[in-house]
Amino acid sequence: MPQVTFRKGEESFTEEVPDNTNLVVRTGIRKFPFPHLRFGCGMGKCGKCACRVLAGAEHLPEPNWKERKVLAERLEQGLRLACQLWLHHDIALTQDGVTPPPPPARP
Image (cartoon, rainbow, N blue to C red; front, top):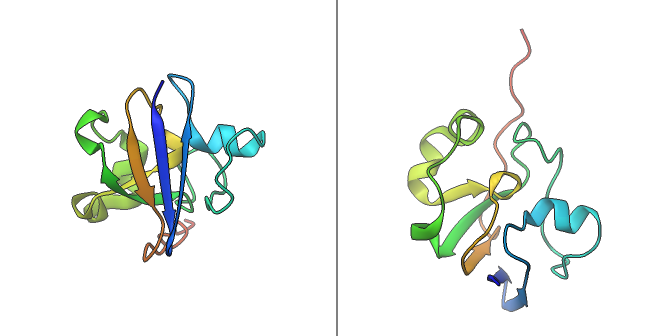
């Protein structure tokens, strides 16, 4: 089972989660013990769940089209959308210093 570490300021929260876990889904149903995970729509549209991957990025799949659209060049800075990640390996994340992208422009 993957071990997830979420860092917030000086605090670090670590928990083992079932394989194929999505952190935003788990947080939304209150089964994820990390109280500081910021999230919104859960569908890869709002970008509120943008996280910096501190460790374990090599085990993640390539960013999908939603992440590429919302995060664009910020992907190169190590950001990913937590709502788009289904975890199979250990990972460490933070949202410290990560500003959610602006909402998409409406036509």
